[in-house]
Every structure is written in C-alpha cells, then in structure tokens.
Image 1: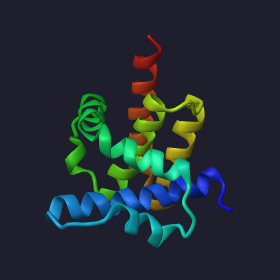
Image 2 (image 1 turned 135 degrees about the vertical axis):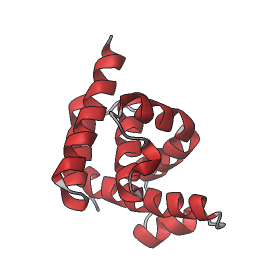
Image 3 (image 1 turned 135 degrees about the horizontal axis):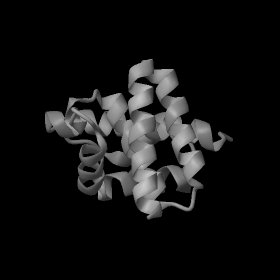
Length: 133
C-alpha cells in the first residue's frame, strides 16, 4: 500500500500524461492511465485526478494570476501537473494547507530544478493567503 506522498507522485505522473495527450489531441482512457501507474483502485488518486481535470480551467486561471512574468502554459508538463495538483488540493480538499504546499514542493524537488521549486512554493503560498482572506 502506497502512502499519500507516493500516491501524489502517481497523480502527478497521470496528470503529466493527460496534459500531453490533451495538447496533442490524442484520445486516452483515464482508467487505463491510472491503472498503468497503480494496480489497485484508490479513491484519493481518482478524486484528485478527476478533480484537477474537472476544475482545470479555474486552476490554470488561478495559476496565471499568481505567476510573476510567466504563464502556466510556458511551464513544462511535469511542473504543470505538480502545480495543478497543489492548487486543487489547496482549494478542494480537506488536506491541511501546509501539507498541500509541502507535498508539491517535495515533488518539485524530485522532478524539477530549484528555481521551479521556488516558483511553485510562491504560487501556492500566494493562493493560500488569498483563500485565507
């Protein structure tokens, strides 16, 4: 059984694939993409992936409003997936805000460079403070 951090990595990988397929206009079956990464069904994984995709436009809009001198679509797909998951968890789940931000930062440390990690931290922190108001 995977822990939540490992499940977030699965979510990020599936979202990465989905974003690539969306951009290339390639048909895909979401269940198949999830099953390639995770043999057993998991409600947290399903809820997060479906939630990100359901709220994708709003997530991108919020990301763009919070990015300085950048746009969401300029980020690579891995960074988009990490940021989208972080924003989704902040806004739509009961996961404590500090956990949402820290988990996104840890994924970014593993899959991106330091500058992107700082940018993701800044965006999520900004969104967190706006939500708290």
